[in-house]
Amino acid sequence: MARTTPRLRRRTLRQALALAIVRAAALEALAVAVTAGVSWTTQEPVVATVVAPDSSTPAVDPRVERLTERWDCSATGLAPGVVPGHALVRGRDGGVRVTGFDRGWASYTGERPGTLVAVCV
Figure 1: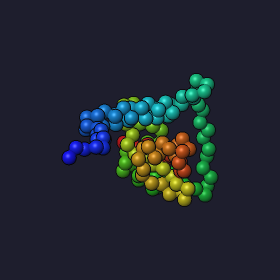
Figure 2: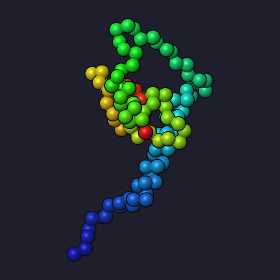
Figure 3: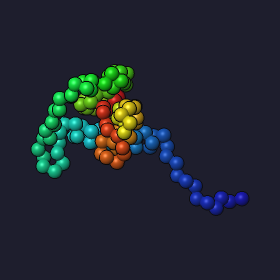
Figure 4: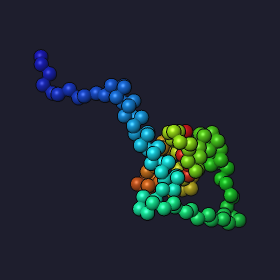
């Protein structure tokens, strides 16, 4: 009996890999531009304000330190050519968890709740 429904086109492994590489390169370029301080509106470097922690909070969260070491993360960005695969995100409850880079980036851009703490290899 003849098949009447059209067959869905499936991506080959090579096509899927190429698409993943292109997506990763685009995300990396965007991450490098943001961490390098490029302002999309004025072409002037963005100046960060350093706020001294008050005495009631520790300077560095020990959990963030452990996760940063374990997952090879950086709060200032990764080296050129390194594609981030994960991110550390602080949720509304104050807890920090390891997520995929896409989820972390969505937190950074405000599309998802949470705060991007670091990007990881």
